[in-house]
Image 1 (tube, each protein chain N blue to C red):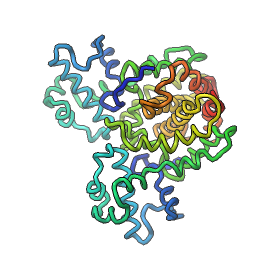
Image 2: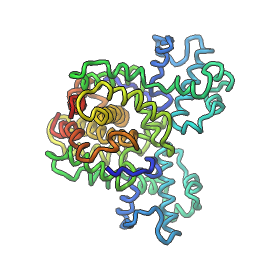
Image 3: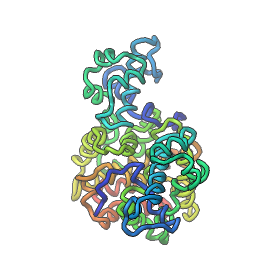
Image 4: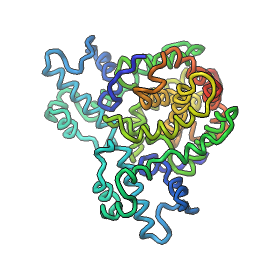
Length: 217
Length: 217
């Protein structure tokens, strides 16, 4: 498994490239800055700084000024590019692209698909697509928009497609297993057993528990 | 399930009372400060401030001076009570009490025991006994002692008792499932389906996946 070498952090984890893809801006080279430097680099720096701020601080404490300082740009440039703080939040904290890939399989094979897709997404994104929501639990104010967003875009979405009793409960527990898989893959890098296991072996071991929940428990 | 109402945070999550118990100081009333105020309150404030600092910052960036300021005591009082920074770290970041309870069951029933014990520990501790290690993944420097400690005290300990092939890999994945359970219980509070499910129902749904890994995958 070619788990990325970079540490998982709010700055690198997540939907960086999926955001670009959503915006039709995915670059094939995987570089953080555009080859030309300049405006694209500024945009990426703003996105990284904003994602980090929204992950590590309660929403109310995040300021455009602080993001601008961290990104090395002027506050007015952020407003010009992204609009309001809420609009910026909606741009950088978006679990939908990851959820779309994760849940894109028929229910009978969803458990295995989820494990394989998680491993693949982590490789492609050089970070975990979901785990930042757990970082946010370290903040004392637990009612951040980040968690609401996760519940809406991940848990609710899965609950809507599950059949049988306690669909919502089972969806929450599947979400937990996905977060747990990402957590243990990050935690036991680079020398852990999970870091050396193939995606197929991980799926053999981890998917049955997920599938049990998908099937109805 | 009587999940605690307090937000999970480094300040409240974790082994607060287990540390007290280890030190023979467990108070039955569950109060944070001693009824007499004074010295015991200072000790608790130091422990809380230290746990928060070691969870949210790389070890090298944690200073006794910073912990003292957060706890409202003098740096010399911390040194007098706890010794060096390393000694303080060892006191406040200790997964062993939780691991001792979690892994205290025969292998054939360990999956169910783990789920029930996690729910019970979270209720008693008013926080999650393991989850702070995931908060620490939000820090860019991923080589913190906190993660080493988790691997030694939780993952390695479980790997040592598992039998069959890939014990280490399976132990890492079980650790992931425990972290994922805690994450989803915290994330979907207070109005999520997991918050309203009984511990037995959670075990019915979530334990089979864990047991699958315990049994050998």
